[in-house]
Length: 305
Image (cartoon, rainbow, N blue to C red; front, side):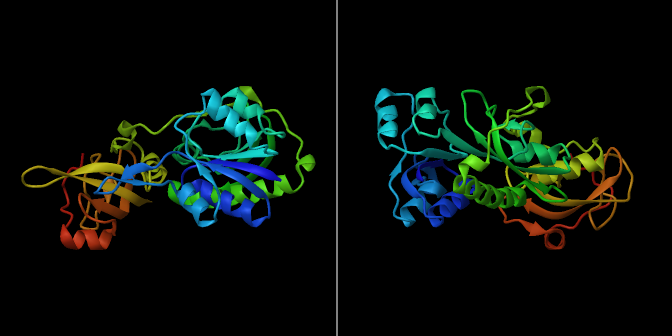
């Protein structure tokens, strides 16, 4: 098929590679414009742009698709279908209608659960037993279109980062399957009454409230790892150091919420306790608990906030 591919972050790269490898004609790759990053604030292309250029594919990165000129350029590509994976721009109706078979989206949830911007984070935070990828026909509503194919995987004890990588590969394979025989995947309407929404993660959600149950805090840690990272303040003589908690386990223990219970840094929660497995101190790389405690021992009785 003649495809327009639309995506931006690492999540979208496996789909681009898979579609190219399956022999489809990639007419053009659309992605977000290069952004300034790093200490030098140099312009850096998106992961999708970098991979597209490596594959020798044409790339466009308009700031918007609302203009008539951009829409005419898109339609002139004469695509059979557009494949969308975490592109980052709302597609106007003229763009949705331009490809002969419309626009198909790789959405990282089992729709209609977790429509919206942060479906993987929300699935982990909510304690969902399973998540997955839905291949859906795009329409004007937010992830409301009919579903063509759904694949599933257990959430188990995976972090958002681990699930993102897994679902990216699953989505790539699912899209290749769908495009290999589009007629074999008739669209099925979503049950709007069962829909839930996945808003972007707010910075305020990242601070750990030790009064919460240990199970909730452990999910918060996994759900926000590696970004933005759940965090707490670890007091020292003069001030308090902000520390990201990237992985933790639930353990036996009780005390005042936020109290360090032992030299192994077991931390009391509102109910139960957790023990950090991986942390990141300010200005330092992420480390295992043992390495962190060699640099700064845990003092029983300390109250984290």
